[in-house]
Length: 192
Image (cartoon, rainbow, N blue to C red; front, side, top):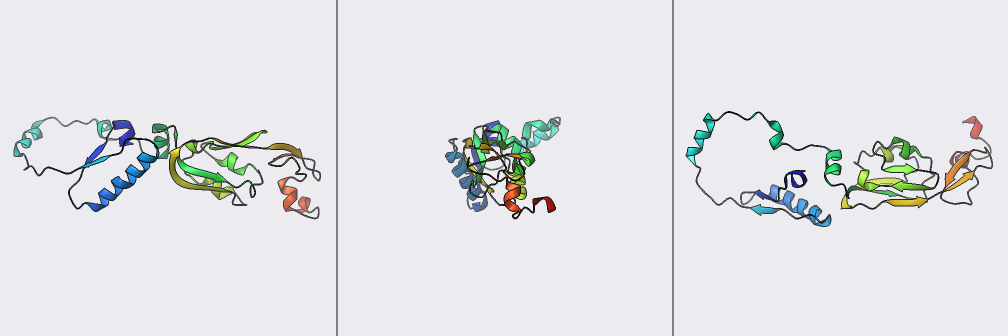
């Protein structure tokens, strides 16, 4: 967020501060992957402390807290970098039954199901994992990632179930049973 909103491109670190150096290296890997300028590490030049700075103690205190803060949270990061997906949302069409639970539960509308296609927009994902939690066939997977966002569309077909006659959508036009009837064999759907 400091990179996006304040234009910060360098940090001052003492020699031997390996924890922060590792953090800057990890940040630079992500920034280079998304096409942003990387950060530089600047080492302090060893100047002595300027004791005349005590004169600043007499100045009135600035109560404006907005000057040193940036918005926090994954939504703020998403808004600061709108063309970047910070999470990789993958869906296995072989396992997905197109029940629509993930689309109804996603607070960011990163997964949407229409009558024509299933759309996955990883740029909208904030990594809440609600879609993974509700997917009983484990067809949806979310993992941290940083890359330019690409909208993925999977075409679906409108079908009618031969058992219960309800409309449903499927990846295959040859599907004759809705997801519920497929799970309940021997005509036992009405009993459960």
